[in-house]
Image (cartoon, rainbow, N blue to C red):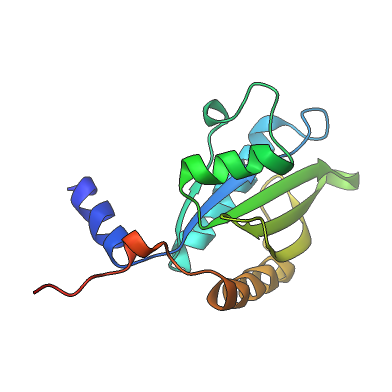
Length: 154
């Protein structure tokens, strides 16, 4: 059933977003940054994107933060958009989060934003602003791959 649903979604030409946590291991607890990446991915799903968090097992052992490595991840994930999340522990229990979105096929920058939250994921208007900016940039600069565009049946 799940496979049928995934096939139906892909056949409708949805934009695929892969959320990649690039937080430095000594900047924040891994479970906090992973939770933030999952939250961002869930919010993107609610906005109508086919979104998933890239698992650590899918990344090279040395990590991946820039350049050709990101291109390889976008290709293996078949991501139309690669969204990088970089979290750092701040003062008084705050978590500073930077988000950068780029087009998967060529790395064109689409949107960037920052927001502060807590480990409990307190909501912030700046995150919603980022999502609004990202939606506009995707609509303008990203189209689903040709194989995902619905074809008329004869």
